[in-house]
Amino acid sequence: MTQEKVIPISDELKAFIGRECNRKVSAPVSLSDIRKWAIAAYWPETPPRLFWDEEYAKKTRFGGIVAPEDFNPFSWPIDRSTYNMGDEPTHAPTKRMGIGLGMLNGGGGNEFLSRIRPGDVITSVTKFDDIFCRQGSKWPMLFFVRKTTWTNQKGEVIKYNTHVAIKH
Amino acid sequence: MTLQQEIRVSDELKTWLGKEAARHTSPPVSEADIRKCAIAVYWPEMPPRLYWDADYAEKTRYGGIVAPEVFNPFAWSIGIVSGAFLPDPISPILQRAGKGLNWLNGGNRDEFHAPMRPGDVITSVTSLDDVHTRQGGRFPMLFFTKKYVWTNHRGELVKVSRQTSIGVLGTP
Image 1 (cartoon, helix red, strand yellow):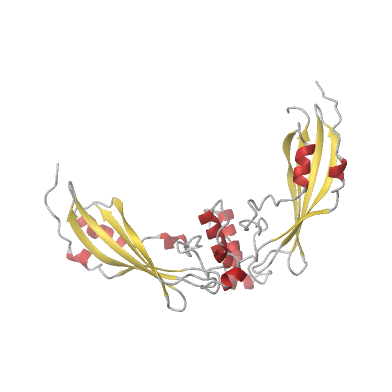
Image 2 (cartoon, chains in turn green, brown):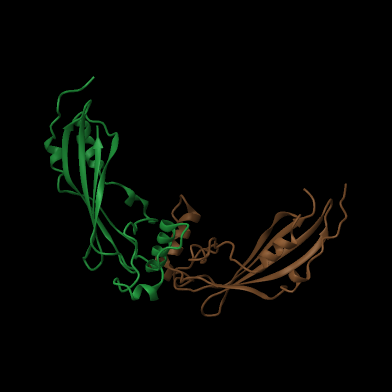
């Protein structure tokens, strides 16, 4: 049976828009982090020299080794609590709207700006970019749009990531 | 029934006894390599701070971060498929010599010396340490031991590892 009523966003949920929900700082990126990532990404082929051969990488337009764009400097942390999405504070307001916590992955996208290099320390900051409700064919759906910005220790933006979580 | 049949050790194999058969050099060990190894070894517990906290490690008798003894600096090297089995010219000879034998893992023996530290570049030298035959309770057996000697870039001995394989003439 189709549930027709559209549930509006409550003020307490609206208050989360623009708010930071997760911040983490990576360990310094090492040459071997990049090499291992590239080996995995290109397995079973030998990865491009740009990712492991310093002499070769120096002569490219990058001027040295850079990480593949999909490289994750936050993998293998000592403190695993950083894996937390940071959305727990929204759980109670979501429930109060009569919407469950079951989550669908609504997809997302990446915009790459600078490259990660050996020695970089990456800071990741995630904010709620938007929260809105849309009527689905059977149930109302609550969309949480989260935007994550990665910057290096020089303040250069590495990438923007947008991720949509759907609660229903 | 006991099978009494001689296994002949080929001269080709004997010529490698005690000789350097292969030499491999690792990429520089990074703090991240050590941290990841320690996380894997101690999972799901948090690994000891000696392996990832530079400030803590500085105050210990090691004077800095060191790697767990089981750390393998040859893992994830370009051009080496498995760091656990560094390629050498003895293995193909052994494969030929061991045709018709069933192989058992005869175990490993490791001696640990200087600890591995961030920045270390490790060189491994492979040699044939021993090859001999022995009559088992039921079958003749060929014992074959490879030795791996690891040294760091300062020339300090890091580890001596011996791997024994046992070829059995017959089905155990």
